[in-house]
Image 1 (spheres, one colour):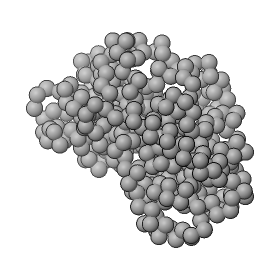
Image 2 (spheres, one colour):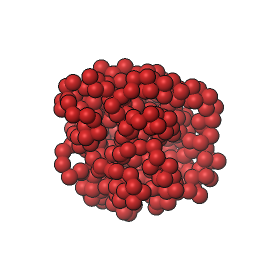
Image 3 (cartoon, one colour):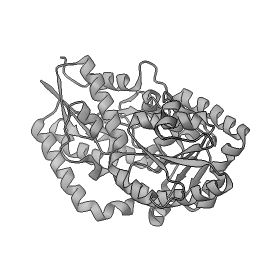
Image 4 (tube, helix red, strand yellow):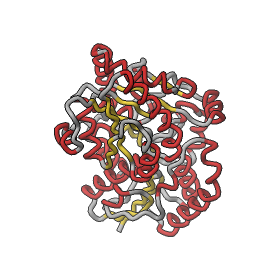
Length: 385
């Protein structure tokens, strides 16, 4: 049997891992799998070496208290990969962990495919040289990435962005409203604070304060918070004192139903920077992008960042389609104002949706769905079956 070892360090990577494994199995039923992941990979019959939630950290200073535990996990993962000797190691996103793992196993002759290009093009372009020594191929999600990595001598495959096959635009609005007894006068708004504990603890208090202001200006708003399993309890605690009780939803089907209800009612979203913004674009939901990290981390990032926008929608459109409220601008007052704008102004909402179509048009790979294109790229790294 040919073994493929797949490593995902957070919820979004787990989804990619699950889809990739399913697509690989459809093409090569003889393949075996092992690795580190979450529920989506477990559904494909791949138990995790250890709970992947331990890797879901963000920020330079936020990682420091966990550094010794992370080193132990890295050592455990390295030992497992070297003992199993897979035909290929597929590392998915989470570069702080996965690329260190790649560096440790690469000398043993194990081919490494990294899925989701690290955004060194955005803020640390000099690190691409080190990356070239760690991986044999990168599977890129964004159309402007291949040129950057190919210039450094790294083989690249643009596979398209998985948000296109996420189902974010295929929810059932009526089912959501019925399931949560949403009144006719209630207007749902999506709130997405992230899938990392550090993001939730830092952003939810600000988001909650912004929603209080928005609800005061526009009665009837009802926050809906999709939650990843690893942060579900933290979100429940953080939202327990909100004046308007939020609807918490778990799982993709419930989340997509919520998206449909928000889009149908002309709602909007308060979204942390990242892939969530692309989900909103696919669902057709106007939104504001927000983010805040430790001030020391922010000061370092400001000196390194090389791109004009934080939102992927804005980067793809090459202009500000979605308002960004980052760091010192990420305040309850600024977020409430940006959230209310598309709720009050249909022209502003329509302008965002037109920008979404423009941005998403760049995300399609030349052939096949993203998971299929990724599977084909991985198969080319394997011995013939």
